Image (cartoon, rainbow, N blue to C red; front, side, top):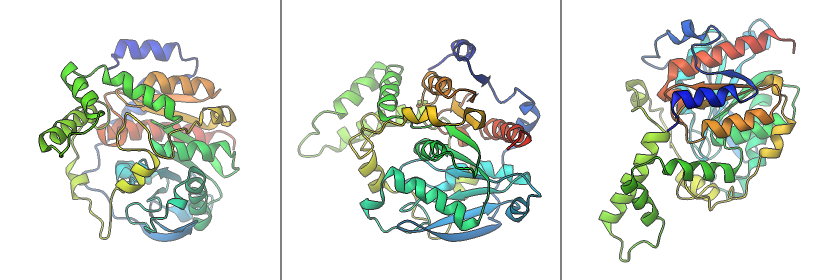
Amino acid sequence: MIERRKLLGLLAAAGTTTLASAATRGARADAARPALATFPQPDREVRLPVPGGRVYVRINGDLDAALAGAAPPPIVMVHGGPGGTHSGFLDALALADERAVILYDQLDSGLSDHPMDPANWTVGRFVDELEAVREGLKIPRWHVLGHSWGGTVALEYGARRSPALAGLVLASPLVSTRSWIADANLLRGDLPAAVQDQLTRCEGTPPSPPDKAFSAACDAATDAFYTAFLTREPPSPAHRAYRPAGDRGFNPVLYKTMWGATEFSATGTLKAYDGEPLLDRLDGSRTLFMVGQYDEARPATTIAFSRRTKGSELAVVPGAGHATFTDRPEETVAVLRQWLRRRDARPS
């Protein structure tokens, strides 16, 4: 795990504008706001047509004011997976006191349509889906945040240089599969030797007939990795209580088809994905990279991506793993709030 002293050294050498924690640049006061004890009901819910079907969209905040130019541009958040849902962003609804917050479930996930057609499971279609959400809501300008796999979608969207893009946040992004796998294998070395050995055994030929004890040991070893680098805090009561009617949740078939069975190897359609050349096509003055201190998208790797995007900014959320919004909601929201305010204050 990356120590704070080492982290600060990496930040100092990054050559980009950096935010070492949410307490910098006035974010301390915002981070003091308590986490949401319960999540608000959506102010508006719609089902919008996108290539391949319809997606569920929820909006909190005054979108009409933004459309009229009387409020800052809204922010849309693109969830991870592939196959995840919008629920990981619920803590970000705290931003709705200043701007509209738009969350949606990608096709074949959560509350959206489930045609389950693999022809829809391409990077390009998911990027087109994001633009279809903007067009469906008639939004002239917005900020786009993508987390993990959602960061891939956001990266591709940002590389299109749409005039509608006011700001781009790449949060713990999957930029290339080779860098993701390299990070995962490096982080395995920080786990206890017994856990590393078990993960190696689990990648071999499974016993025949199936052995429940072996499967349980593999699950425990994987959970040890997730606890260290994915989700370091248990779900809050508000998250445990959030169960929208009709929510089909995470889609493991979509995840396995596009990625694979584990974090440590990609066998799906994303196995050769490389978005690193797109970093040079981003508008760095409108781009923020954000990562957790203990993120499986390692800070050192994210810093390197930020350096390639000239003029971009970088935020490291202290104490957070990959799930920055749920591990450290106050700090993560504070970073976003401050960056969005500063981005909005600049000429468009």
